[in-house]
Image 1 (cartoon, one colour):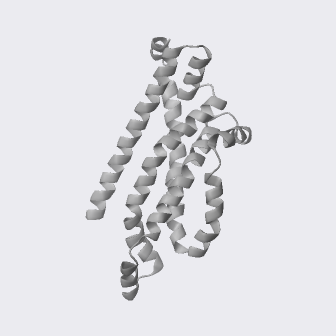
Image 2 (cartoon, rainbow, N blue to C red; image 1 turned 90 degrees about the vertical axis):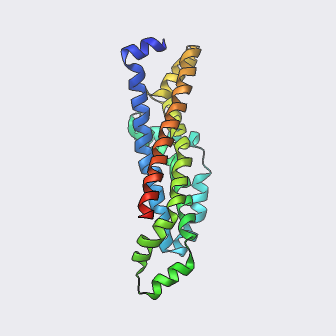
Image 3 (cartoon, rainbow, N blue to C red; image 1 turned 135 degrees about the horizontal axis):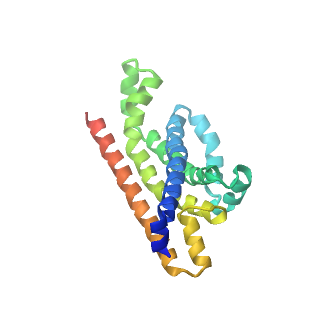
Length: 208
């Protein structure tokens, strides 16, 4: 069964579909969430005001949101991307904000004494000092992103690794299920390597 899917191209198509969902959702949820978290540094009032709502959203299981997402956005890739983004956004937002708030206040005051604006402090001090937190959030979200994509494909899809696993389990084709799980693990490894590469690039940039 697995060999036939590989020869016919269905296996590579499934991997491509899930990878696309994960990458797009990751960019929207994890990267976008990181940017929002950093921007919250500008206003402690807004951060305190939104904190309970962010915590409430973070407590909602992806499995509970996925059916609504399918209804609102349809059964195509858009709904899966939204589910992946939802899975990632809270972790990245809270992690990056925590990093921004831990910026050394003495350095902030030093820049203020030299006449630096809040925008300059944010760009030249807050963002670089919080970057290790941002990358940590991205690493944590790799697994969440894949889980979100698989959950979305479980509920409604005609392609993807999650669909392949669901099809294998419904037909009691254990080899297909095991292959799907192995593919998910390899995808997590690959995405981790990519984020680690990004971390090295940012580290070299900060040193320079």
